[in-house]
Amino acid sequence: MDSFIKVELVAALAVRYNLVTLLGFIKEYHIKTIQGAEDDYMILSDNTKIWVKQASKYTFIGTDDSINGIMSVEDFYRNRYTFMHNILAKNDGIFDTITNLFDTFLQLVTEHQEPYNPVTTVFMQDHSEIYKTDASGKKQFITHIDNVPGWIPFAVASENQDIVSCRSAVNLLYDLKCCIDPSNDHELQQQLRLIQEAYPNEYNFNLTIQD
Image 1 (cartoon, one colour):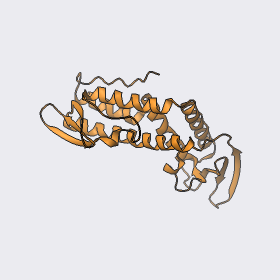
Image 2: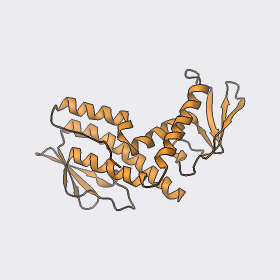
Image 3: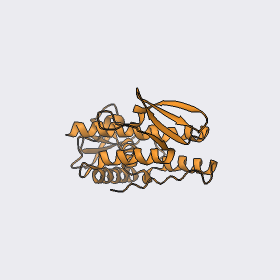
Image 4: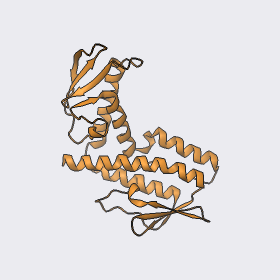
């Protein structure tokens, strides 16, 4: 089960990144509709011209997920984030675990990482022990974290899953929170604001996800 959840979380990170990136294209070309097509394509249109994108960048492979019919841009984003939320939230405790770990790692970084000293590093070793290294490379034990689940995809943040920078863990866990609840996603919200400023009264994005 842990490996399956990890695969889903890695997929969610990719989908979320691609959705946020796509907003820049939507703004530049004033895209109004998105339509699913055959052979892993989707068609974007400004009602005059069309562009083709790879649909699998915005879907969960291996699940009953597809882009069907013609949707407004707003409906497309609501559809994608609702599906992503449902895929991840169906597993009890995932969001709470991610949120609690985010708070824990953020507190560790805030208390022990010197913000303007790149040689001071706070990191997790062996999935549970927290250490700090100073400029001399001396390792100092800080604390122990219980119940860090094996399904957190730390490999995305670190090549060595046995040693993970706490700052990298904060960034990873923040991105995972954004996958489940887009209201947390400052980058997404900024892109949406830019679109609405460029085209006032044309787009009505409401990505509040209801359980």
